Image (cartoon, rainbow, N blue to C red):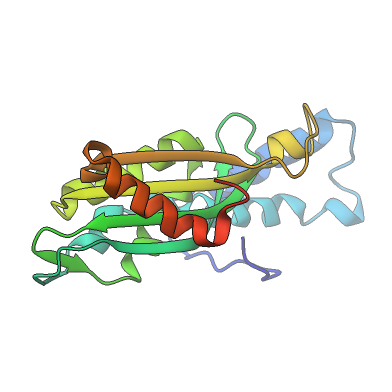
Length: 204
């Protein structure tokens, strides 16, 4: 989430903001708060606008960012690592954040590097599971780029583990999805892991 005190939400947002406002008031009352006290008067609106932003990926087709590609004979690994992402766990609607490392082996075409983070944002900005996010990203890149191989590794810190439940701050959750050559060839898989571990050997 951004550091902005207010979020830019389109006037014609597909999100039912008023419904969220009513629900937040009910939650505040249900936990024993007074939704009409000064400090909480604008909270339902703030939460509604926040949800419109952090769940905006529900209304974005991630495939659109992979439509424009460039013909290129380059057939070695392309790796983009340390891509920051933010998402919300669908089980508790609490945020989880981390970094994604994405590699692919082109099959005659490449995509602009800025497009991969955009795809991640579109998939992450919805109620998610880190496992599903990892697989969705790998499958989408594999199919849309007709790549020879795709590797996706996500590292995440989950609020549902740090501020509630087991209360284990600092725990890192790592998921991976290997497709094509990264799954079939040990040497190729080892290469991408080595490149990522250049900075993250303490976690992987």
